[in-house]
Length: 400
Image 1 (cartoon, one colour):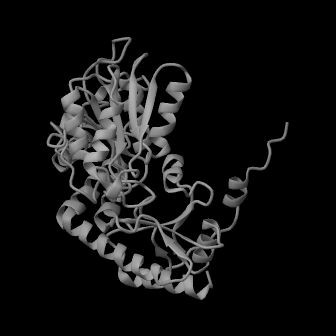
Image 2 (tube, rainbow, N blue to C red; image 1 turned 60 degrees about the vertical axis):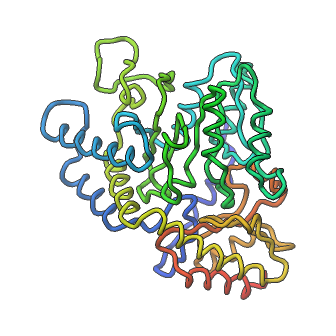
Image 3 (cartoon, rainbow, N blue to C red; image 1 turned 135 degrees about the vertical axis):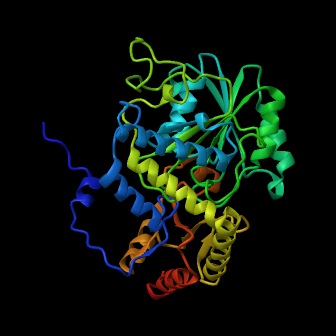
């Protein structure tokens, strides 16, 4: 049978040309541009030392392993993880979240998550529940008066059951800058002896994170967003004596004569050849973030948020969602225009933003945008107010 034409594939077959006038405001999807140190080191790796770490004792393999360990050291210090060995590299943040969720949960367990979760958390949990393995409850992050943290914690506490094994949530939403009170949720989990897992896809590199002070047991992060690395790598950090079940099995360079995976961490979770170019890119990106300072990055992005928010609110018919929560991501809509139409108009003006539902069904239902989607604008350290001026001008010029 002939395959049906897929609309996405049809779009991808189009001839796309780029120019140097592009204004990039889609950093929540992936940060761009990359720091020069990242591109230089990735190129140097491919040219000079791209051996296979942990697969031999020759100099090239050992040098690759050394570079990977240096990245573990830097990341563990950046997020307050227990040790470099607590950092396990995975292909993506989504893979890492699946590893955590499916590696922890057992038949009969109960899970609590927020209504602001990305599908990377929502779908694995729904799959386990559909298969009759677990049950779950969802707490409403936005329903409390004035965003009261006390009321929110009380709601979460009320959902804890005798068989609750895991509370999992994101640090910051991927469609707006709403952040959950992570430290207080971590304290609640500790008091009830419940494991706490965190999705930091939108917060790492933008906000300070300390796994031990915040009582975070598991964390998953991407390389290519707030840490300014390249696609193809992410990591899981483990602050727990729990040994996760494996998501996949295979060779990892240790205990090769055993028929089953070793319990040795982090190699237990690092199956197959590690993406060395992406990992050294992550290392340089994390160094770049640390050199500027997370507080300075956050202040810069909040300033851009306020500038865009205030500009949009002056445009008739515009709605900014949760404008009181400042951060690196802003979602808006224009009356009588779909999010996709607005994004197409902005793309015609060489402005890159994202429109639609952003892989976040729960959050759009909570924001009551599940029928319309939103236009998402997301900032990085390389953006300037002039980028916001271009966007605001385009919105006005196209009569949106």
